Length: 593
Ligand code: ASP
Image 1: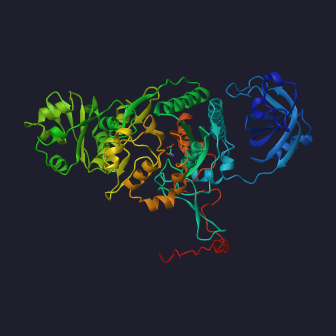
Image 2: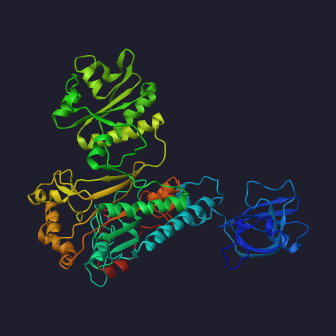
Image 3: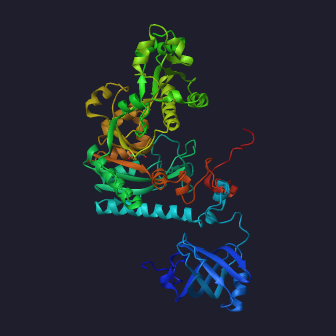
């Protein structure tokens, strides 16, 4: 065995028939106890597995009574001789099932209080309780395994990048705001009252400054902090594999990220991932799948019905089209077989996604049936059906709404129908989505960067940008998508302070404001900044997918709940008034609000 285990001869899970007869010392936690006619058994658990400890008539009475006096989760050390279990008691399904340790000496290292849940692998424990007692939860093999996998994956990344000449650079946590589209977590300065640090939403600016610093190839497994509205798959702090390179274009970044992904699949899953990955411009992705993160394993596609939806006499379609909205449909081959309940669930999915609903029909031998069918009997019907390439046996679903809502609903309905039909399968599909717009319009008619404001526009679009155009300006940003999940984003950056100011101005940040927030970057760009670009992969999400964990919280050792609290420590919590005083902060009374 290559592993060395301080204080012990073996890990509990390491022992096999080959060690029978050897004097063994193991340490761990009491997992289960049994007493069969005066013979005491204890399953001793450590990180490496479980070993049966036995105290029968061959053991000293002192050792036997020590064994009898144990409680679940007591931490003990046992010495003894390994022996074969008697025939008939061997457990072929357990790695150490052939052997047992006859106790000679037992030391109680520490006692355990009564545990709030049984620390057994297969027992279902409410998540809140698991998080409150995460240290007990971590003793369970499935959790230990995920954290070990995470550590191996981080190691694989570090090896791959170090071998490729990348430098691991640690960037500050106490810093100035980096805009990634979220709210900042702020930290008050005691030494300079009234001034605040922001915790980094990402190391974006420092990695760019590292390029100005000539470091050329940067990476970091970095913690990012964003005060966003939380969702099930989001954490207020999360980990990114952050990378940046100088003198590169998109192709170099794609090749780098692909090599890291190939290495992770090989080292962690033993699978050969084929690279280069597929690519698709953003506009095509939105047209065909109504999303910028399509699951390509799902064969369903969106059809644009703008040209035909106004000719079937359906008032809803007409008014949506008149107000500049979308009418789009999805053809589901074989979907006519879905039950009424299943179709109701599709309509519900559309409503949950914010759309008014979904109009549908089934296509039978005698024509369409279902709510939409009465509009398809007239003149415009055949053309409408042809636009959806409808065939007998299909279910046709349509969504009519304002573009943003329609897009979300179509994406949701497409995913839902793919699941209902059981057609989302096959090997992992990794996809580069490219040519994102530089800006997107937010509700109040203002424009915001689609990625972040340091992303370079397409060179061909710079003059239009300089003339004030925002819509349709393409960016050199790209996302990596795995089976419908966005794994990460990146871009080729602006390295020219004038162009940077043009982008700041386009999003309503005048020179004064830009200077206040980003003077250090604009100044650095005065000193020969190299062209550069990079990428960041959200590791929590990637690991949850790679290790087939049910949520990102399973692959984070000490995660927060969906409301951003830590049941283990009680954070966030109030602070001592004296601490606030020291910081020069007065707490507004929350009760009166
Ligand atoms: N900083 C970006 C992010 O966190 C990634 C990048 O552009 O490299 O999404």
